[in-house]
Structure formats: C-alpha cells, structure tokens
Length: 499
Image 1 (cartoon, one colour):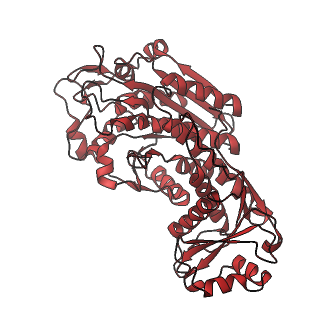
Image 2 (image 1 turned 30 degrees about the horizontal axis):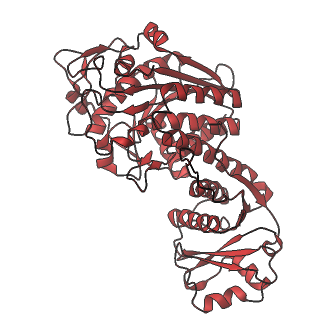
Image 3 (image 1 turned 135 degrees about the vertical axis):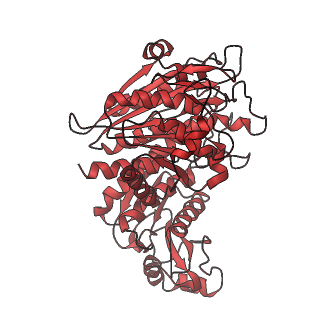
C-alpha cells in the first residue's frame, strides 16, 4: 500500500458554468423547484429546459434526490445532474454534506469519468465559502472510497478520475486542506479495513516508514527489546499472548521552529483484539481488526500534515500489538509495572487498550509537549453512552478541550466532552496494586479515561474515545470511517495558523 494511495484528484474550475466542458456538471434545486445560481445559469443557457423538466414533476427538490439530464442545448457539459437540497430556509451542514454525497454517488453511477460540482456556492448557515469547499472535497472522496484490494476480482467499475469544483482560484487553499484531510482519511480507512492477518504491528511499522520516506518525517520503530529497556511493562504484557512481535512507532514532523514544544498524538493500535484470557464473545469479533483505528488515524493525520507541510512540530506515537489468549498471555489477577513505575492489577485482560496507552503517555513526557492527544477505540461503554455520532472527549486542560471542540465543529467530526471527576477515580482502587485496570460497569468510558489521566499529569492532555465513530459494524456496512482524522488535522491547522 502506497502512502499516497486511494485519493481522487481535485481541481478548481472558473468561468461561466454553461461553457465549462466536463462529463457531468452538478447543480442544486431547492424545495418547490427553486434553482440555485448555477442551475439558473444552466437553465437560461438551455432555453429553459431545466425549468421545463421540473415543471413536469420529474423532480421537486426533495433533499438528496437526483435527476440526470443529458445533452442539453447550450451547455458544454455532457450531463447535467440536478441534486435536491430540500428547504432553502435553514439549509444546514448535514443537508449540504448529504447533497454533495448524493451528487458524487449518482455521478459515479454513470459512465462519466469526471464531475464538476457547483454546490459549494450555496450558503450553509454561518459557514464560510472556504468551509463549503473543504467539506465538499472530504465528502466527495468519502463517497467514492472503496476497499476491494483483498478480492480476487476487484470491482472494475470505472472510478471518477477527477472531481472539480466551480470556485474562484483564490479558493485553492481551502481545496488543498480538504484534499489533504481526505487523503489522510483514505489512508486511515485502508489500514483499518486491511485484515489483521495482513495488518500486523510490523505492517503498521512499515507503513510509518513509507510515510516518513514520502514526506520527510523522522521515523523510529522500537521492538520488544527496546521497549523492555525503556521499562514498558504494561504495553509488553498485552503483547505476550501473540507470536506477532510488538512495535512502538514514533513519527516526527519538525515543521515548526527549533525548540518549539511539539503536539504529541498517541494512537492505540491493537491490530487484533480477541480480549486475551477474558475472551470476547464470538459475535462481531471479526470487527476487532479495527481496534488499531487510533493508530491508523495518527498515520492518516501525518499523511495530511505532510501534504500540507504544516509549520508545526508534531510527534506521533503508535504502540502496536495483538491481544490474544495463549499460555503466555496476561491473566486476570496479574500485576504489571508500567513505564511510570505505577503498578496495575489486571482484572480484565480485555481492558488492554489503556495498558498500552499508559506507557505511551509516559513516553510522551520526554518531548516536553505543548499538548498530548490520545485516541483509541477504548470502550464499548462509550458507544452505549453516545452512539455513533460524536467521539467522547476527556481533558485535564480546559483550553485544550475548547480548542479540540472548535476544531471538531469546523471539521464536522464532532465530539462531546465528558466528565473527568476525581470521584470516578475511587472505582479504580486495588488492594494489591496502585490501581486496577477497570472500574466496573458504571461509567466504563469515564473510568477508562480516569485510568489514563494518572499517566498524563505532567502536561495538557486530552483523550478521544472513538469506539463509536472510527468504524461501522455489520456485514453490509462494515468498514472504517477514517475518523477522527478531520478533527486532528483541523486542530493542527488551527495551531499552525497561529504560529
């Protein structure tokens, strides 16, 4: 897998829409048949053909509906694709994103090899034109993404070779950001969707090396022996049950000034999680290759960082191993010593993500970070609490939390802040060690975050529980979403813009 695989080519086109050549041009129609600005221009150029079609009742502007018209007179594009936008009053983010997705999917279902989208001209609440373009690129790429490399006969349906947007050339920066985020998401999705018999810790390490070579990052991969020297007893205890060697991956982008404190991103990468001795039930265990989604998102974010050349110092840490049950695996009741020196009683071996992250959080201290953000498919309890729409956000620093919330809103990769109160720490008490690795069923996502907080006391830290957002389960919808790459990259862009 190339570090630059699986991302469409984006471009900007300027000029009068009826004169622009393309295989398909996309324009919007509101409820009641009201035409967007581009649709009105196309209608005039075609002597009212679009209005006539709408008057016939073939389309009413219902949100998400589409209508394909071919060979309209006076229009250079081979096809005109009308997309329903719903009510103009209160037109908001979700409807806009859904319209772009519907348009791209409909265009991809034709023989068109390229598409020109003119939906980013539409006002979306209080969002800027730049936001519209960024989101359009992200949604467009997401809509045509597919993962078929593991099939003996991959889908040979032609992909859209190019996606253009009707916009001024001054919007190139917004498109570049959207394209970079889309590329990062594609890499994260590819890694998540690659099965665990292929995507091993060693495979992830090699992907990190490819990224470093492609974008000029520094890359260090530490094996078991190196981690032992560092005293990473908690991380290595999880890896004991597998014959796949653990890898601790470190990526560095030195884009800022020398001496500037870096942002550290830490991603959980359990390439397969059977639960260890506390074995998971068989149902849905096939989805546990996605337990490396945090680490995949860190690599995806680094791809976007490389594409954008952000003037910021960023470190990526990805502890990676498998969690399997064999004679060497952790057992309930075992006590391990973390890199910080704190001891942990393992009451449930399936609460392993926090055991690898805690050593990574201790390792992060050596960089004297400005902030540390970890991300992990950490708890099923998070899914029960918040469902699949927002990621859970925990933080020991209000300014960091607010910066992430603002980035999440801009990226439309939303979060919901959860409590990190001392009262929850009581649930982690152990009679035999400094702490237990679980706090019981009540508030399971919160107590997991409280566990991690004990290893992040010396810097500004935030934790994203992405168990409900990083992938979708079920045979028909199974697949990685690429989240929270948009949130991470937008957060970093915001910091770089302030430099």
